[in-house]
Each structure stands twice: as structure tokens, then as C-alpha cells.
Image (cartoon, rainbow, N blue to C red; front, side, top):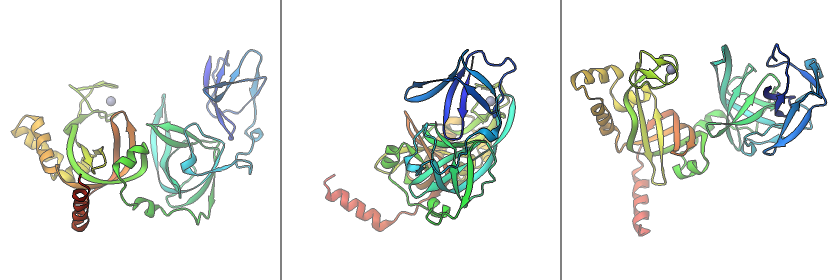
Amino acid sequence: MLSGLLSDGTATVRFTWWDPPREGVERGVVLRAVGAEVREYRGRAEVTFSWKTRVGPASPAELPRVDGEEIPFRTIQELKPAEEGFRLEVRVVRIAPKTVTVGTERRVMHEGLLADRTGAIALSAWSDFGLVSGEAIRIAGGYVRAFRGRPQLVLDERSSVVRIEGTDLPDPAQLLRAPPRSIADVEDDGGGEAVAVEGIVVGLLPPSGLVYRCPTCHRSVRSGICRVHGQVEGQADLRARIVLDDGTGALTVNASRADTERLWGVTLEQAHERLRNQPDPSLLEEQMLESLLGRRLRVRGQGTKDDFGVTLTPESIEPAEIDLDAAAEELLARLGGGG
Ligand SMILES: [Zn+2]
């Protein structure tokens, strides 16, 4: 039995193929199936090729055009996981190639962020559409999947991308300069693609400080063992999992080595040196906490939510200026409110 996803550009469905060709089926091949069965599973169509189905090769030219006028427009806010068969007009906020391993094959995909007036969505493109940051595009033949609890737009060889004027689309700088939102709001939204928050450092979560990572997958290594690659020579890294609180709620900021070094004022090499003089790594974490505790930070990045709350993968972490007038007003309001 073979199963996977089929797409004709208007929709992507799961399929099951009983008694498939022995030589296998290559990704991207175009097929014509006569006598396929369609059933509904959890509100979604599923296609089955049974012994009654005749399946043969077809030409890509026989597939329906995906940029047809009959496909409805959606806004980013309207997109839900498993959505497909829509058109979208968006601005490319950023885009970058990424090499991934699929089975034994190494492929280049393109990851980025798209925005319209209603919001932003992560992009994962399996084909190179030559996208450039700042340009406006019309997309057809994409589909939405949930990735780490957030909707993500997936484009593949069946999707179409057309450059448009896009005068009513936001400019990317504007999106990345958006004012901070309350952590409670971010939590209600389940995170977000380009989230900005401002709060006070109230703690650190383990593992923070000096950690060791697998040289292949960068997962943290415990007792010299990577849970994917077994025994490895761990590479030293510095990180801080910062708990940020703004009075409405708290979230975790996963600071990279560069951000951690800058915020803490101690480099990885210096941390190593301290460890030679005081061979207790928990002291390092304490010293890091001491220097971060109570600092006000403005953080921008991608927020994802799980059972433990929202985690921000930051694009930027900046010390926030405390607006004394606003702080005094806030304090007065709280006192006045009897709280
Ligand atoms: Zn590994």
C-alpha cells in the first residue's frame, strides 16, 4: 500500500493506493486515475485507488490551470490549517534558502514570511519561485498546514506565483516596526509570525548558560549522547531561555549565542574560562540570571504556543527604554484602581 498527497493545484488530498506499481511512484509525477474512490475522513476528502481504478501516466499539460479566475481570494487572517484552493495577494517580508534532508535526498527549500493588511504567515516553498524581499505577489495553488501549532503556507511545483503592483499591501519595514503587543494578546492568538512584546526579565529556564550541542543536528547533548545521532563530540554553545513578563502574562524567549553574549556581556570563551576557575556550571547560570534579572527588553520574533505557553524565537532583542512618564501614569492608575 502506498499513501501520500495528491494535488491538482486546486486542492491537495490524501490518497491511498492499493497494489501500487512495484517500481514505486516518484514525487511530482502526473497521473490520470479513472474509477478512483473518494470518501470523507474528518471533514476532508480522501482518494483511494483500488483494484477497480485504472491509473496511468499523464502529461503536466493535462492538469487544470491553477491561476484560474474561479479560485476565491483569501486574506492571511482567513487562512486555516488544511485550507487550499485559494488565491492570496501578499508582500514578501523576507525569504531565504535552506537545505533540508528528505530521506536520503538533500533539497533546497525557501523559507520566509509573507504579509498582507490582516497579518503575516510563514512560507515554506519546495520550488524556487525566485522570490525577493519586498515584492508583492499573487499566489495560487498553495496549501496551509499547521507547523509547531502555527499555520504555514506551503508552495510546491504545482503552485503559481505572479508579481503584482500590490499598492495596498503593507511595506515590510512597517510590519517589522509594529509596536509591542501585550503578552496576554499574543497568548490568545497562539503566538504569531512577527510578534513584538516588551517586558521585564523575571527568570531563566533550564537549559540556560553553557550547553553542548550535537555537531550534526544542533540538539543539546546530554552526557555526550545526542538522542538522534548517539555518541557525539558536543560543541559548546551559550544560550539563555529568558522568562519575560509584562504584567499581563509571561513568555519564554530563546536567546541565541550572539544575543546571550550581548545581553550578558560574557562571551562563550569567557564562560569557558570561568568554568575552569569554578567548575560548577550552575554558578554560570546564576551569574547570568543576576545580570539579566529585572531588565526591560523589547523582543521581536516568531512566537509559537504549546502546553508550556508561548515561546519566542527572536529576530531582535533590544533593551527597552523605560518611559518614566508612562511608568508613573501606569503606577498611579494601578494605585487609583485600588489594585
Ligand atoms: Zn544530533
